[in-house]
Image 1 (cartoon, rainbow, N blue to C red):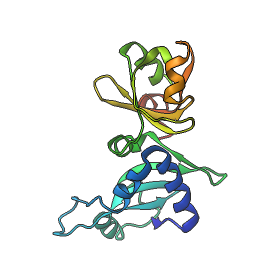
Image 2 (cartoon, rainbow, N blue to C red):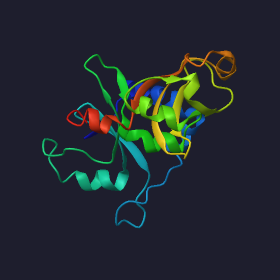
Image 3 (cartoon, rainbow, N blue to C red):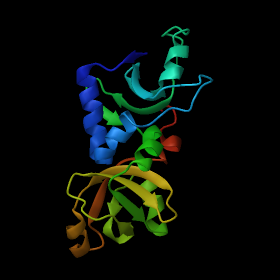
Length: 188
């Protein structure tokens, strides 16, 4: 497990910024850790292990130095992974972190939740509520009407355009959802 280099950090922060905006500073700088027996466990940091990026407390990183790299499977919360083409993809395991700091949100009607959880994009007819000032290609966290985070994606239309479009138009392009725990359990 090693710290991210400059290029990797830029890719991770760019992707996170799309979803959380200026709350990225809160994730990186202002989020104290409460894990571990240390009286001052420190803050959270990002670490890379086998092309997967983890959000982990500094005290846990210190204790993990006793474990060989080959034996270490995971540590902290996985937020994404690097592809063979050196691109960064957010994974569903980081949904709680993203949902707590999301800038743009969409709430789904109960009738369209299952469609989203099966990997389909969000249609206008399934949207219950939507935050203001969403622009095209902004990162969006998708919730149920009971405020349970279901996944995330990218806005296909702005908030203003959503109000005018027909019910079968795509509002959010699907990226990840909690149904992946069942559909892709071998890969996670």
